[in-house]
Image 1 (cartoon, each protein chain N blue to C red):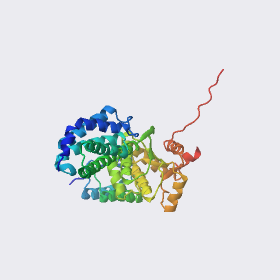
Image 2 (spheres, each protein chain N blue to C red; image 1 turned 135 degrees about the horizontal axis):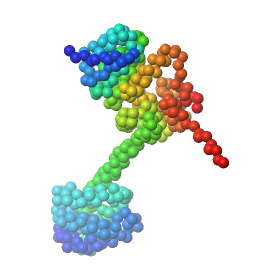
Image 3 (tube, chains in turn purple, yellow; image 1 turned 60 degrees about the horizontal axis):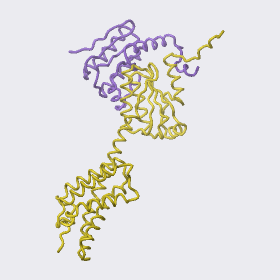
Length: 135
Length: 286
């Protein structure tokens, strides 16, 4: 039985999906991830889907679910490395992946997670919208 | 029927060509800027030679007959090339019609009997009607090819993705957005985001004349897809009328960052990338 490995990296969890997800695998990943989050108390999940070339509505929903559920467990989810074709497909399917942050690559994803989690700790963080207003 | 008119024409081939060329040259609308006299002459000679070779006394009034296949090919070729060179339909039409006049003039010199002459006129008229139709069909086809090619070129040149700064892409959209174009726009933008690793994309719509609900939906799709890729998308250059239309249509753009001008959008992008533009301090001159 295939399983997608979940790596622990400091306070974040790292998941790299190297194969095309089929339904069973995606469901397992969802439950594994949620369990790991609650066990480790991680406050960020980074999912790298750069090797995924095919998505369907089910896959889109699973990713959305992971985001919503981990939000309940106080962990932010960042999806990184989405292929253009995958992005277009998700938009055409009407799945904008609410509750999930996206980033271009793992580097930017980690940066985003760090800024999001530190914002949560501070409660009153700087509002990014103020940058333009200042000028 | 006493006179075999096709034989007369064959005998007089050179006279026909000379007279036809003279007729064409005397036409006030002659486009010697588009085609040289030599080319005009070689076109004419080719057509007359092939027409007279195919012409018999029997097929004189039947332009659809198989005998004329070669003539029709030449006619189509001439008319296609003229459509591409920018001749007007009138000029192309005159080219063919004037051959009929020339043939009639020649026939008139040879055939003295008015009844027979009338009969020849009718039959030649029928023949050239078919030729004219073929000429126009191919002329319009040639024009359509030109239009199609231009449409393709416009779609290609009108969706450039510009890397305006390290990490910032600008996509100026000019002209109406339809589904096919949105697809091209979206694909080229997303591919460029991956290739350049940019985190901000600015969609400048100051060149979009009208926005209806469909266009707005296409814009929204592009923005969502950009977000899924992990980049921010800003829409800039929305004209006041368009903003009004969008509100009247009840389209919700509240989740999207919109800026009045490309300059403002760029400034905002600098802000999200934590870049700053400032005047350099005046250098102290002694």
